[in-house]
Amino acid sequence: MSTDILFRPISINGMSLRNRIVMAPMTRVFATDEGVPTPSMAEYYKRRAAGEVGLIVTEGVFVDHPSAGYDRNIPALSTPAQLEGWRQVTRAVHGAQGKIAAQLWHVGRQRTIRKAPYPDAPTLSSGDVRSRIPSSSGTPFARPRAMTFDEIHETHAAFARSAAMAREDGFDGVEVHGAHGYLVDQFLWEGANNRTDEYGGSLTSRMRFAVELVSAIRKAVGPDFPILFRFSQWKADDYHARIAESPEDLGIVLNALREAGVDSFHASQRDHAEVSFPPSPLNLAGWAEKLTGLPAISVGKVALSGEFTSTFRGEESEPRPLDEVLAQMERGDYSLIAVGRALIGDPELPKKLREGRFHDLVPFRRDMLQTLD
Ligand SMILES: Cc1cc2nc3c(=O)[nH]c(=O)nc-3n(C[C@H](O)[C@H](O)[C@H](O)COP(=O)(O)O)c2cc1C
Image (tube, rainbow, N blue to C red; front, side, top):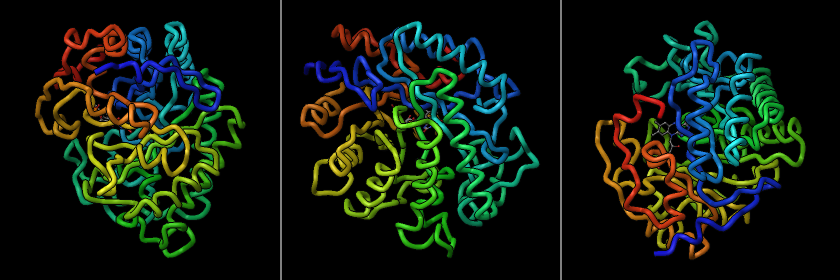
């Protein structure tokens, strides 16, 4: 099957991309103890830009708020040293003709404090509902406290500050991490949001936090800076959870976010081939693009046989052809495709696909997560 569809240039709010292959955000935990990106991280991203990735979305980056993070070796966008570290990353990526967006992250209740950058800061969430699962380290998550109105506004301001810093620092855009059951998603999802004020209850109240957040970022970065928004139905602590039971509900949320300033939706699925609202053949990104008219990014199990959550459980994946992705994109379902683990396996994946060298791809192996190559 021809891969030409992947190599048609596209522009998102003035950000021109050479192709439609996006590097999915992947937390690697290789920053210094002060959350500063290192020269090895700059090289890691530069290799993917040199391998012709259209847009790199960074690993999740903690925003400028003491409650945002759970691990001091995950980078943040807050201190002068962190900004300088990221400046080296954006320079390196631009030097290889790449584009890079920072994924802005606040973990909310999915927070352990043992390695947190600010262990004394409170664990804040939409409500006071504790996560049902242990963290990946096996340490229990801290008990969350529902944010006060002041804390909600402070958190919006923290996202806006980090987004403005990203722009100053040379990033080409930002992505709000609104997926997988982290803070923004804790407001969207009724399983974590037990508020009774205007930020909880009905769908339109639950989405208020995210909509105000995007408005605050838009105000801080100006009209001509791309804002991507990542969302998902599934949560790290509940694979069967849904924020929208119907396309109508999904349209209400996504269009309110679009009006607040989102330029592109990144619809996170563990498997891009899964349809979202049967009998329609559309996956979640297909629905996002159809409902909003904005270019959407799909993701999940591209070029691999197993889901990324299986990798964390110890399974290996086999390489897999891209037929389903190409068919979905040929049909016009969605505009861009994000690739996670397969780009850890082979930084040159886009270049090799462009040259028709699928069989030269270096397959992803689980042990590759131990190093930053
Ligand atoms: C090591 C690793 C770290 C990840 N960290 C993040 C993250 O920081 N933010 C995020 O939104 N998703 C994260 N994800 C999910 C990926 O962005 C992606 O959605 C997932 O890996 C599925 O794509 P794949 O099947 O191509 O790997 C991570 C995945 C992996 C494997």
